[in-house]
Image (cartoon, rainbow, N blue to C red):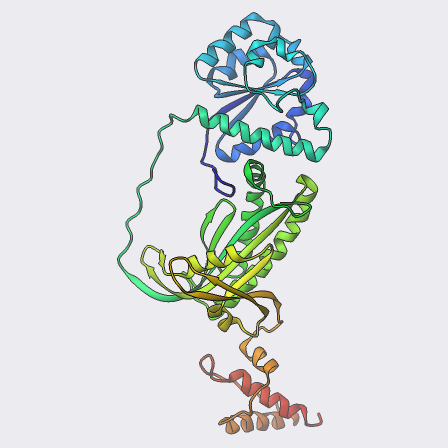
Length: 424
């Protein structure tokens, strides 16, 4: 499984076996707390207070026995009672996996049922002697969780996969313009070196719930619709299923809000796990065909994904189609051209730097410079006449009604400009 993919639901039962001296590892902020991250995958955890209790209840229906090995554990009934050893052998023969973790220096090599198993941290290392720093130890706990997940996957390899039948797509289709936002979460070390491999996957598994919750809030705020969430990546539609006049602008505003929100989340995980969080975002606007089953066919999503691939850390890239719709609302700069798969076509890209502060089309027109108003002298004079009447302490109300884009804001601006020149 590559970094960013969502792990399949595991299920299964894990019992954690430890001596009374090592119960600190069972606290929520220690080893067991990190292992319980697998509960999101349906794994059920229990702890055995004693070997006798484990024999009566836990071991008979568990898939993996996590054994926390220390000298206290070796001196306990877990290793001194022959009945326990015999029962462990029977359960191993039935398919249960024994998963030893060496906490501290002890004579674990003298116990074949431990020494013959793959154990962690590995080699001659122990948690207490080789991982004294909090950050190092937390990273180790995440690596242990990765190996525990692999152990559970081995146990369940023969489990029959359930395939849900796909819903039949409706035949009705509609052409519409949408804006697609593609966002991917990525990790780096504190020095900026990209983090990948199994360790990145496990850290992502820890972070993704917060990432998704945060993203859903931002997307909802800007009236987007989650189309697909896969591991550390997501696809969002703006303009589908509900169309708004400013969908493209909303998409770019949502992208900038995501960058800011991830920076704040990064500060937390820099402290907890010594990693930095970043997002790469691509946005593209185009016509698509919307089928009755809510699926969309077109190049909006693929080109948004290509823009996301070309973007840098905490960077938002858009194409020309989106730029035409948001020009004036955001500060942008050219970011070069990119190729599109399966075509000779080249796409000009633009980096979104910041919001310009403009909220309406009229705001952007004002900044660029307004042309003289034409064909509205009668309406302007009517407003000015009502203003003169209002100055005589006779209240007036003027209602301006027209379809979008016909100049209501321009008319009001002209009236304000003329009134501002009068003494009042």
